[in-house]
Amino acid sequence: LNHSTVEFETVALVGVGLLGGSLGLALRKRRLARRVIALARRPETARRALEIGAADEGGSDIPGGVGGADLVVLCTPVLTMPALVEQIAPRLKPGALVTDVGSTKAVLVRELPPRLRPENLYVGGHPMAGSEKTGVEAASADLFVGARYLLTPTPDTPVAAVERLERWIAGLGARPVRLQPEAHDRAVAGISHLPHVVAAALATAVASEPGAGGPDLATLRELIAGGFRSTTRIAASSPEMWRDICLTNQAAVLEALGEFERELARFRGALEAEDGNALLEAFQQARRARVELVAD
Amino acid sequence: LNHSTVEFETVALVGVGLLGGSLGLALRKRRLARRVIALARRPETARRALEIGAADEGGSDIPGGVGGADLVVLCTPVLTMPALVEQIAPRLKPGALVTDVGSTKAVLVRELPPRLRPENLYVGGHPMAGSEKTGVEAASADLFVGARYLLTPTPDTPVAAVERLERWIAGLGARPVRLQPEAHDRAVAGISHLPHVVAAALATAVASEPGAGGPDLATLRELIAGGFRSTTRIAASSPEMWRDICLTNQAAVLEALGEFERELARFRGALEAEDGNALLEAFQQARRARVELVAD
Image (tube, rainbow over all chains, first blue to last red):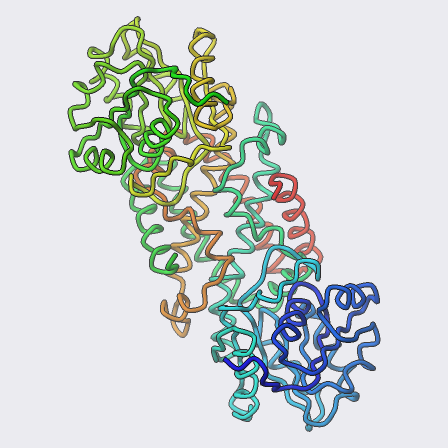
């Protein structure tokens, strides 16, 4: 791997939370850009990105900041992106590429290109890396190492732009994967969006569960072990980000949720009927599914 | 901590899977017993326990093997325990203590003592340590270090027996906690049993989800990242063990499940209505709940 290949001389990161901050750190550590610009609505956020070394310069004037960029990476919640692109479109350098790190793609592939001038191009991106931690303080230069980084070009996207982004992604240590926007959204609805909803519902349910005569919160906290810890880890993720993801992938998330509800109803039915064989079968199928899906 | 205190000279482990095997390794590493006996229905299992150093002797004659033990620890699925105690009761040494590592306690506290002779005593135990891995191969001498180890004595249990077990538990590096059997079962229904059911339903739902035009299993496997991995980790746990846990804690698990279903319905409602504020609030509450319950 040649870390000194510079695909994009100047990279502007719009939004420098966990993902934007990690991109900045990675770009600078691996010398993948000559200049990294951190742009954020709040000046303190851009300042913190500079302080931790995630950018060479930065500020809160987003349209003013993108003018020199060869690559603009949107790292804000998905639903903020259309308005953001409208704001920056007139200031973009001809030939500058726009991409993003959002977790849903069909909406963006539909909404963003019409807001750009013909001399700019959008290619949807989604690094499958993250953390329940939020904010630039949690950023890491190695967040993307070994991760899949999904790209969702359309039939209209010039192959050269996709290949350029793929080389840039490889430079980050990630593994580029091409997917159609709709296939992307359906796939991540099950393996990522549904688990976030489930983990969130579980955390709230357990915290609110103790009824009359039940254990108090202090006892629960004292007793909690690894199972609850890992099952609900992602319930601490950014609420704004996950609201936007759910809203922009509504149909696929509802479909995945329906499948989950059916499975849960099967457990409830077996448990109500005290049907040991049905319970055993359900747990056995789950174990096979987990082993099939995840190589640990 | 004085690791050479021997509370029980001879300890018999009935069942040497993950927990029994780990107990054996810990007892021998920390010199907490003069003799550890591994007993298992299948001779190969006892043999493997001996091979990995989890016991000094072992075999498949369970009633014959417990005769010399000062402490008998039942490490088999909960529902096997009543019959097991019936088998071993006539062979127990007078004064020998019986405990277990099962995840539900009220049923055992009710069912086991009447099967023992008056010169023996049962105290329910539940080490809050485990792994999705199963079998003696996954055993570890340090599994209990730092873990809560719950004891569920009843008003009839002599304090001396409880205190003796507590010293033994401290010797393992774990932290003994006393709870009433019913309070125990309600607490673990939410923080442990419900998460197992949820993780299992999620694993099965995602593996079976791809419908017409959806992503195939190979694509999902390729894309799966940390979120799904941690949320479903415990779905790989022992199906037999979890069947028994659900069956012996039915009412509390159903109650916890009901709370979870209500929370899930709230997400569904907000998502169907595309109600961004309701979704944001639900994710925010979940994040607060997670932070409140788990100090990471």
